[in-house]
Image 1 (cartoon, rainbow, N blue to C red):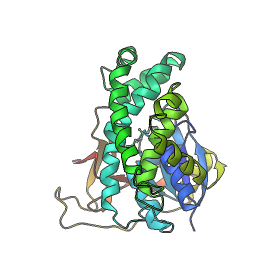
Image 2 (cartoon, helix red, strand yellow):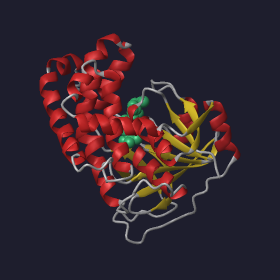
Image 3 (cartoon, rainbow, N blue to C red):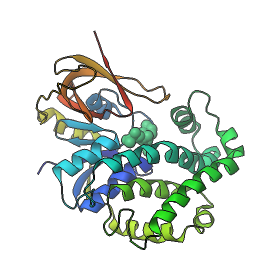
Length: 309
Ligand SMILES: N[C@@H](CCC(=O)N[C@@H](CS)C(=O)NCC(=O)O)C(=O)O
């Protein structure tokens, strides 16, 4: 079994989604703690500059974005499954809500009231990333009643889902939808000073969160960024060339391409050569003197793939 190496940092809520995923599957993994600011030279060498956290590394295969990471973990470790009710499509559709509108309000609730006490470099960076070029955290503090109204209504949807009397979102076993709600709950309860009062309206969510916390994070042992880079350098990517005759963009292995998040976050495109393509994923081959050849994987949804001349 290859080693699963997660690049993350402890306060990252999106990484918590994957740490809890390791817990659900009872997995062993290697933990590489990265800087909270985008000063991550070894990781950027392997990702071609993709700046978000978390990133999963398996040898010389690098998986960016939690959509891609969850899919890969399920392929490599099918049991216990992330999809206890078999349907694999709806949880990904649900993730577009949890990672979009729901995360958007959770970020404001969790971050705005504490921003004044955080390093200004971190605040400026996250405001640009999550609130866009005009992001203003002082305005967000003033707007908290509106934001809480947004967040509360969405949490109400979860509370009513749990009203079925079953312990998890899909029924009797935890799955990907639970991970998607858990990271939001974790983010807000870790940071928002009035979280206990806020969630007192949602006793079923609190009880469910107790069950989720019990799941833990699997078994992690640490590794340094330099060691992780050496793993990539000493291995070859495991991903075979794969094409898709139905690809609407006509992408084919061997083409030069750039992949960029669709958000207005100022993030750079990652450039490489198409290695594998399908409806849900694209893998680019990148060659870098620091790590040799790596395959960098992205989801299709939420990213624009452009052909580069
Ligand atoms: N769509 C991405 C979002 C990841 C994301 O926004 N992660 C946060 C950390 S919780 C991040 O990268 N923040 C900026 C940084 O750490 O550089 C995913 O699902 O993985």
